[in-house]
Length: 329
Image 1 (tube, one colour):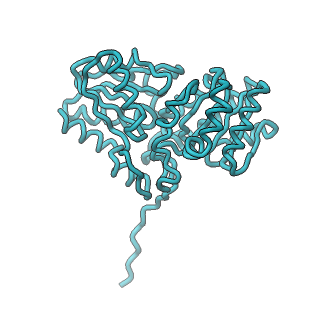
Image 2: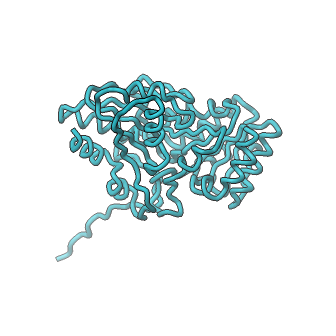
Image 3: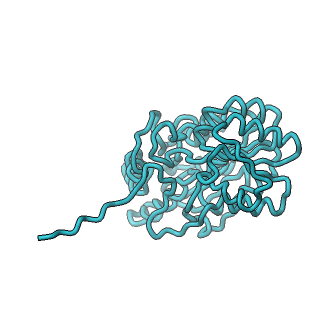
């Protein structure tokens, strides 16, 4: 008797999309946003370190080949050249993987770009746990590294709405910026809320009586989904989206933290040095005595594997968030 082989789930350790089946997505939002911004600002230039396709910079390269520069596998050269362009009056967006920007080229970013406060926009692909390739490519500590750099603005967008609105604001911001890139087919969620991105501002997306989620990046998407599922358990969470990590909008966030509700931070980053410690520090400075519970990545080198499996393992899924909340209430 002949039996048909069972269908095998196809996945990849390098998968960069975190969209669920059937979820609404937008393709390459950063690349298209940069092209749109470049139409309105002829000073915008694009650079990459051999990763145009994998940071969506190839969209810009196709539209403006005369304003695109391929620097090869040389991240220090990438940012040194971007600094020179900014000194000459251009507005460069320089893309590579977040691990290479944060770890390999830190000194160049610090002394060539941040110290003279140049308008260089650093675009870091695969932030946090956005790949299964293991510690060599998982930028779990990039925000912790960059938060201590003076003059540097840090943005952790949730979706294409954030990215599309952030790009022109980053170009106009004057000083250096770091954008944690979501690439490929990126889920769109913020269009369902009365939301606009404002650099340096947090936004309350949803009110709630029992829990306050303070989130950034893709974890805002997960926070909103968990809030809907928790309603079936008579739990009503608020969601505060904080796309700008530095400078931090303490006033908006602390107004939600300083209540009797359970406060949970959610981030696609190690719990060391990222959103959790930013919120906790702001609360202490303001004299607010509240327990703040972090949901984020552990202080360890992570495993390699399929991205959905890793998100479940390290507690970033909607189901794991829901379980954490119910265990605390």
